[in-house]
Image (cartoon, rainbow, N blue to C red; front, side):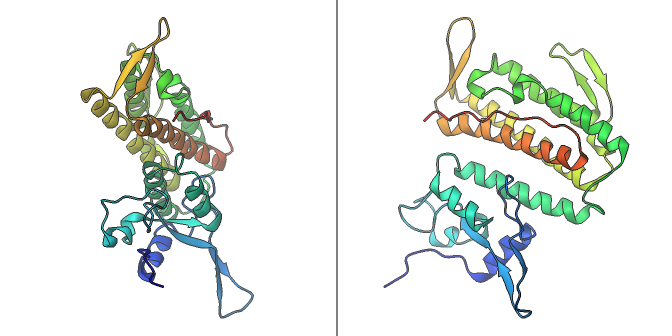
Length: 274
């Protein structure tokens, strides 16, 4: 029987695993997937080169516009443990294409950060003081409410911009521009891995503002409700992307805090509307 799957060549599988240090790319997992075997001539591998857009017609996240070569390219692959590989295919609404690309990019950046860091954990007190300041910068409704529950989109955009400024310069200000606290920007962080993660967070914040501007320019959302303004996105995948991206940002920040032994934040997981 002919195999109609656009499978990854072995060199692509090896590339995907190597680029994330053979760790699962799911930020909630990060499990090592390759190690020693009792047989001294063998290794144990529990990792899978998973397709972001499926290799077969009718499979999870199938994209009919992709060519066979595109489906089996590294760009369409993500390295996961066996459990997470099954997880993303069992719930394709939550684990959509946009989220998997976020996972992939972050996992690769974290792998770079781990190589650059002399130590996985810094005990430098100055770093911990700065991290507590950055956590305070994210302790605002823009990182606690679903996008559909935001008061004014303009205020949401301003909150994201203020957070970017705080990370880059160490200046935290109110919505009216009043400086409420000053510290140092993320370039002052000594731990290379933590600084790289903060750079990733900043890139994701910039992406949020860019997508928000596109949504505004193309009239992709409307307001409804009396008194408390609510937002309805015509593109529900876009609405979910806003929520999942902020959730991933908080996860990355919380992972730094966990390594530093300080309190982080939690982005509430609420049911998605479809």
